[in-house]
Amino acid sequence: MPEDLHGLGVSPGRTAGPVHAMGAPPVLPADVPAPGADEAERAEKALRFVATSLDELAARVEGPAAEVLSTQAMMAADMTLAEAVTAKVGAGRPAAWAITDAIAEQQDTFAALGGYFAERAADLADLRDRAVAWLMDVPMPGLPRPGVPYVLVADDLSPADTALLDETVLAIVTRRGGPTSHTAILARARGLPAIVGCAGILDVADGTVVSVDGTTGAVVPVSSSRAEEIVAAGREERARTAALTGPGRTEDGVAIPLLLNVGGAKDLVPGEGVGLFRTEFLFLGRTSAPPVAEQETAYRELFEAAGDRKVVLRTLDAGADKPLPFLGLADEDNPALGVRGLRTSRVDPSVIATQLAAVARAAAATSADVWVMAPMVATAAEAAEFAGLVHEAGLRTAGVMIEIPAAALKARQILAAVDFVSLGTNDLSQYTMAADRMNGELADLLDPWQPAVLELVSRVAAAGQELAKPVGVCGESAGDPLLACVYVGMGVTSLSMSAPSVPAVRAALADRTVAECRRLAELALAASDAATARKVVAGA
Image (cartoon, rainbow, N blue to C red):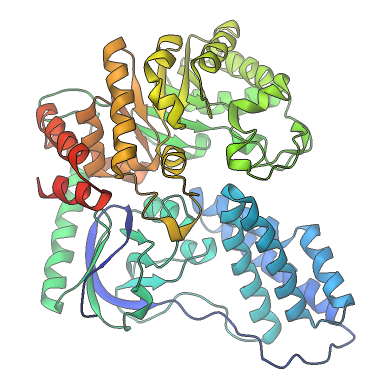
């Protein structure tokens, strides 16, 4: 490894150790054998094995890992896939080839849809590899076992691979993937430094000792003695951040609430509250919308667990990119830019009306400080209409997410119509840079340090300060300790992230005054590109 490598840092922290690569997936022989009489049965058994093994693995883990594994198991058991495989067998393909062909067609379809489905295409590849390995009676593709702590490198990681990570894995570096890939999400949940979109990482020989910085995205060859120093320093830093408790605040005492991104009561841990309560779990996979009573029960569970703390609930964020049959949406050529989020109320206003009624009933029965926000809002008129619906439902605090550049450019007008806004930097990056956030080849464009994205965030924060209204960030970038300080310097008033990211962000803010954070923001905004912005802020 003659030179440094760089990718997109998606889970902060620094460590060092020898590189070891993932095992290769099974390869089908070049010559296709004649199919046997039992190929359909063998294919069915292979898919059933994959679904069962993933369900069993999901039962052994918790949190985001369990959720993504359960979703992957459902994909393996999906009747559409089974029917496609059966058709291939009927056309004369042996079981392993039939599964490979059927999944390849589904991958092409999913990739063309983009967004949520593009991410599922990578999961399908893992299902294929597991089914083919079972049929060929070869070892399952998976993690290396070098017998020493190591840096795991791979083209990409499946949810199953990530769920099986143990304490010997020091960090993760992948060639593909983006800031919202499973690798990024699960690495953050485990507190592992991680870098995605790192070109050249697969060319690094096993055993090469490198340092990995999940904040800056740098992979650098180091000596074994230097690696030991980096590991020791990382251990001391983790101990220091773990010892620092209490609410988020800067060194000069300015409160910056550090909130959590959750999908339900099971994700809630002690802290300052919830900055993003995703409600899609109640709706996905259903043929009819859940009734008010069922929704109320689910929301009330989290509100009661939160006590009197703040909970920011996001209304249903689904649409053509996360289709729900009961919405009755037509197929779209570009679902990421179509009817999704608040726009689904144009097709069926009853869905959001029912959800707000359930939220209001749950809020009235608990002491939680419930705020409600809508996703995919583009105009001040949409924001005002949503705020009216929230207040009519009996809820006090209405806001919207800023995910679309048009909304960021008109932040002052939007803030005049609502009580608060929250920046969803994942989608804001995607729409600002015209780069599908599931496309690992464009990971550099999806970097939240991109100057254009930072300028939009700064514009929204300035509007919030002018009108004295809260501006939060609930995108994954809020969990980056360096970027969190930049956001605070811009005027952001709260940050929401996954629970493992909180200690490092709390420590970073506690080391800096607001004036110092403003200086970091100035440096980042003046940079010519994302890499320079990150570098100058880290250096300062």
